[in-house]
Amino acid sequence: VVDIRKLYGQADVFTYDPGFTSTASCQSAITYIDGEQGILLHRGYPIDQLAEQSSFMEVAALLLHGELPTKDALDKFTHTISRHTMVHEQLATFFRGFRRDAHPMAIMCGVVGALSSFYHDSTDITDPKQREIASHRLIAKMPTIAAMAHKYSIGQPFLYPDNSLSYTGNFLRMTFGVPAEEYVVNPIVEKAMDRIFILHADHEQNASTSTVRLAGSSGANPFACIAAGIACLWGPAHGGANEAALNMLREIGHTSRIPEYIARAKDKEDPFRLMGFGHRVYKNFDPRAKVMKQTADEVLKELNISDPVLDVAKELERIALSDDYFIEKKLYPNVDFYSGVILNAIGFPTEMFTALFALARTVGWVAQWNEMIADPEQKIGRPRQLYTGATQRDYVPVASR
Ligand code: ACO
Image (cartoon, rainbow, N blue to C red; front, side, top):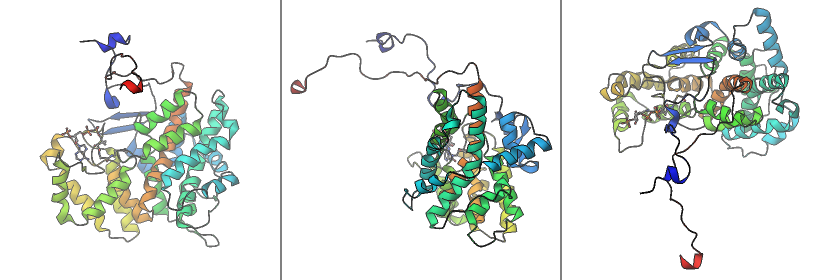
């Protein structure tokens, strides 16, 4: 028996922690989660208070700068962001290279990565001023890019930003407005959308944020790092779950079919999982899901929509939360369980859901990236491994194999 760790000079003790379930990769002062208690704080402020009383721009300023801004500081920040909402005209040409049926997340990965070729000045990560400008550019341009991805897929012309509107109102107009027609932003929808953005703004070291940090740890430029985060977010176990959850609820279709799907989720031979259920950290409840459920009720009422999918969702939650399997495994609805119902009611196609998540999470990614770059203890991220392959052996020429 050969100890392969000694053979390869790896006699040091490493922590083997697949999925990083108990390894902190950094120090951070941005977001705090207590999964047992269902607590989520941004810079110390509870998520439900922020979702109820704040705005997405204010939460963005809070995450980036550490304190709630004064009225003047918030106005200045909002004005600065609105000054960066336009994208380079050449970027519209870049969009036209994608197939019409491209998934918006595929477009977002490409276009956001390509921003580094348009804004050379803010790729200098050693200059704090340039880091700030890059952060503003990313936060400001994400709604424009997401709306363009949608417009491109449905064959409508792109709409330029209207900076007299709020960040969220502007995004709704660029997505649903058409040229030469006035688009009136529904304040209830605007508020709900803003709240959805707040609920998705940051969530400490989740997979996509860790990806942004890991990419950034090599000194890669911020546009490339955020593009890496978008790629990671796309997966159905992460940001893609909102799309998957609504598709699943539609597939269930009627409350009478719920027991069949609950049985499938419990069957270990079946790879099926209840999408929008379960979380790596929350083992009591996801505080974002509570706000999302309430918002779903408000938006559907305002828009006078009676969606059977919402009934299926509520009944599924009720049945699952009284089922021993879900109780024992501490599986609760997560933020994505109800968000799809709201986005669908507002008029977004399911393919756009994860792109909206990316738009909102850009604020958190950028805040985390800035914190990492400014951290004097920051090193290139370089996980170790537990080698399980062959021990050293001699090469065999092909004729002798
Ligand atoms: N449905 C049925 N069973 C589940 C579910 C689910 N949604 N989630 C977890 N389980 C079960 C697993 O089968 C496993 O059972 P076992 O102990 O018998 O093997 C146990 O619960 C633990 O699951 P893990 O996958 O080990 O938990 P992990 O923390 O790695 O995964 C995750 C968390 C990925 C969120 C998982 O719960 C899941 O796949 N949920 C569905 C997808 C989803 O909603 N993702 C969104 C997450 S929130 C976000 O990204 C914003």
